[in-house]
Length: 241
Ligand code: UDP
Image (tube, rainbow, N blue to C red; front, side, top):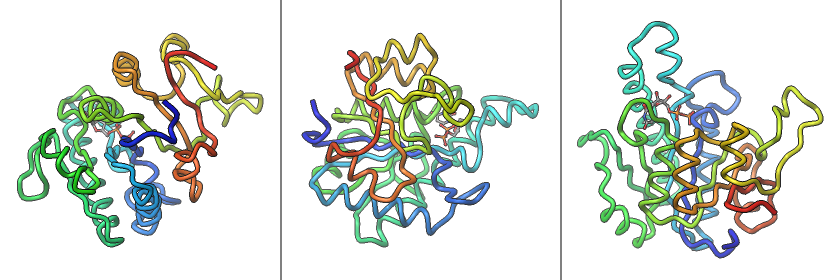
């Protein structure tokens, strides 16, 4: 289905986009800008689920590389995603957009647990649902969390907003001749190990026929452009072309 006819989407933002120009953490001004993009998309009538990473604060792999127990470090990473979810919730609500945060790691004082039927109801009522803590288990990432929530919430597409404007055949920062794909198959992404999302997330999208739209969220207005079919992006789907 073309993106323009999507009714419900899942938007995955990597934690690093919340840093703005900073090296680390959360830039509240930039989170406001992201929230404005989400608000504009919502005003077109879309139902929006959000998943935000935690890499701007903590990544389990980085902790493990420094000698920490991987699972322990991953739980810290999951907590980082909850902080980001709360920051985005705050920014959206300051713009008058109703939201609910649902965390895969239960945290009753802070947010709801993940309950699919309740999330459905929130979307029906026009709220943005922010899913935090990924899948709630170590050795996964928020990409897998995004694919899982997109599948269970029956989203028409998974939009991955990141720092690059699509999927390239080689790293565009290192190779000036790198070519961006307009469309690329799930199978090619997996066999060529193209950097889109981790393999388990791509496989879950493939098995559930959920297109992955990779685009740059750093340019103002880009989310709306991509949703209206006018933006620069790469679409990962079953067949290329
Ligand atoms: N994480 C995890 N299980 C999940 C989701 C996240 O263990 O289901 C941990 C993992 O350590 C990961 C960190 O949380 O490195 C932050 O998430 P991610 O790396 O996906 O954030 P992003 O790269 O999107 O900012």
